[in-house]
Amino acid sequence: MATPPRDGPDATADGSVGLSRLGRIAAEIIAPTSLLTAVFFYFGWSHAYWFFDYFGVNSTLLGLTTQDYLMRAVDGLFVPITVAAVFGLTAVWVPTMLPERLHARIRDRIAPIATPAAAGVGLLLVVNGLSRILWRTPLNQSLAVAPLCLAAGVLLLWYAAHRRRAVRPGPTPEPRDHWKPWTEWSAVFAIVALSLFWAANDYAAAVGTTRAQEFVQNISGHPKVIVYSASRLNLDQVGVRELSCPGAEAAFGFRYDGLVLVLYAGDQYVLLPERWTPERGRAIVLPRTDGLRLEFVPSSSREIRPTRSC
Image (cartoon, rainbow, N blue to C red; front, side, top):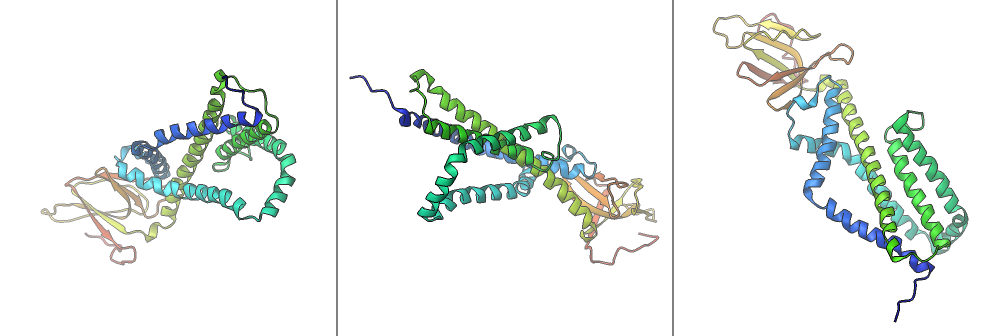
């Protein structure tokens, strides 16, 4: 006996089938730890790049390790992941907590305008998000606004299309057309995922720059560094003092103070003068060698004071 054709409501199940298939595929792709590590590595790289770029240093020269990047990724992704989780739980929990009568009343009032409102707002958000690729406007230049508009707009357009199909089911799809729901879900998933990736990357970069600014604002609160060198380093910087250490048997003939350590990585020291400013300051990168010795002094110590000898 031939299988009877499906009616309109059953045809709408294709969307859920496509979603379930897409979910399984996404789980198979995202599950491997290597992919998650790569994603966190990228965000950590973005954080580090913009942190050191504020000081005029290219982070790729420092030899940062994977662990360094992953630690910075946590700083850059903590807020986005937390906010996304809170919004997700709110969207799931709030409808279930409303009294059934109130929930039905809200649904009845919103239902007539939900589809056109979602379509209109979604279209405006998508246009605003895509416009950031071509030019900047007051509506798309703020942090993560453009990618979030694009993601939200696509979801609203999908919601409007889904509601319209549910209210006005079309003809029963042919078996060969079953690829359409899967294609729709794949496109929606790709756009939303890439938009969120874009937003998280912008946020990680902004956090990197902000952390650099905070470091400079509190530079006096960081431990001081005294650099002893076997040869002259010619550190001609504002606030950095060079002293000659007398004595023919002195292993280190020069002393430099007025410096603060930013980071040690890849056998290199990244130092800043205590009076560093974006307008007139330069970062100092010194390799770790036997000809250098570093001494650290707490910021509260008064040991470092003007002197004419080592």
